[in-house]
Image 1 (cartoon, rainbow, N blue to C red):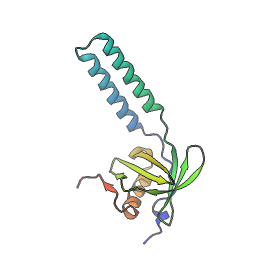
Image 2 (image 1 turned 180 degrees about the vertical axis):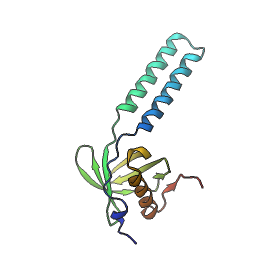
Image 3 (image 1 turned 180 degrees about the horizontal axis):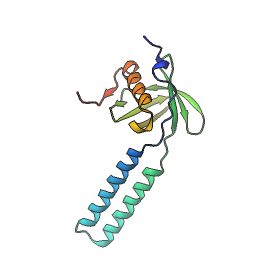
Length: 146
């Protein structure tokens, strides 16, 4: 069996264009629904402002995990956005799907999450991550159908 770290070398996910498009679409539909409903103009304006605020917060949010690497002992080394590194255990609540991966980590008293969309990594890197999660991640939810 190959060494675990060979399954998943250091990964540094890029921002996902697909996720941005999804967020824009959902917020645009929400905005449209607010204005197509027979609500008072003040309520429509309030809903529109809240939808715009939600979109701004969603697009401005940066993940606190800038990179990750599977170590040979099965633990993960996380590169945080402030440059610090820490070791973490992958939790069983993580989800592996053909389109995206949601990773939940526990390090000390802190829990961290990372959403990795398929277009955030090179095709081969995303495949290797999914394989590594299936090999070392017992109890991880498999969201793929079939």
